[in-house]
Image (tube, rainbow, N blue to C red; front, side):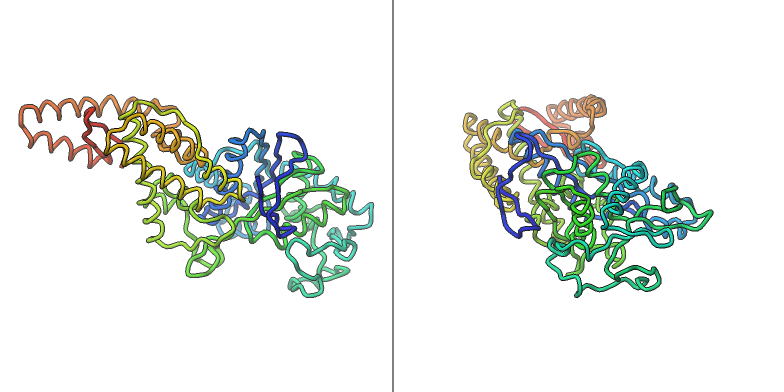
Length: 459
């Protein structure tokens, strides 16, 4: 398998540190507001990576953090007039629901920043001891001039960088130095006691400390959105390697979701909240849309593009359901070699999806020709591909419920109505039969008449 490494700017073979194991750290949400599809694209991309590595028989450890203390969270807390921790907990739940609705598997661990303050203090202490950090009036800064490789990830030169507005006020040695620890005044919340006084962590040290704690001083892949490459990931590399860690071997970044050419973000006011979009399409269709472009390409959002993706996926879903009824099997088969080759090539989803759609096209022809043996093989291939992508409509959470119990109750009620409908049709009472069909349709159910009888699905 080959992946694009942002640090080296090349597509290179994946060479895990430990045989048959892959360790991944993904920067998760700063829980200061509701999740939009820009956040979810990153989540879906690394869920796809994890699923594909699992298909290839790797044991995957994926850590996705929650930044639950940050300047933005404190700002939101003031604006919403409630405690910072209540703000963080509220929006963390929204993110958890969004991940679940889009079929993103839970990470191996999902650590919160506030639960790892001791690890951050330890790492900062190491940087101060070896001369890479310094304290001024309770603040602690990383000394960028002591790390010669700074800027390598984002391909920038230090002296050409813009400086923050408060650089002079903070009495830093250099305007390019960044905060590892921020002092607070007595009574300020939140704050933790440290050798340098009361305060709270800087954003960047949080991820370095958590990545080290869960994955060790060297791990395979660090991921996140493209907007994090600088300064967040650049600063992570600097502070971790300055402390003696090898840190991440491969850096992966998913590109933005854009609207009218601009990065989708809360600050631009053009964010598309997941909860709103799920009123227009299903979570399965939204996941398919976010996976439809190469992860390193910008994805331009529009209602038309979302609708087109939903229509495209319906062809796949309809084939699977029809074919499963005809051949009576829902087991995965052999995956087409062209699909595997595409996925191995830096997760080339556009090519992989074209293989999937072509297999569906041939499968529909097999349905028309009533070639059950060929259909069974093609269905097995489609099931293998959709399961690798997490978009198989027969599997949880897309099958109607996580446990299936709710679906069994619905099925029992619907089957009774379908039996009444069939009796009415046999008696040529088409008015009553149509009335039952319309009642089910108004309830959000689609009824399809097949040679094996009527079957239902959620529209």
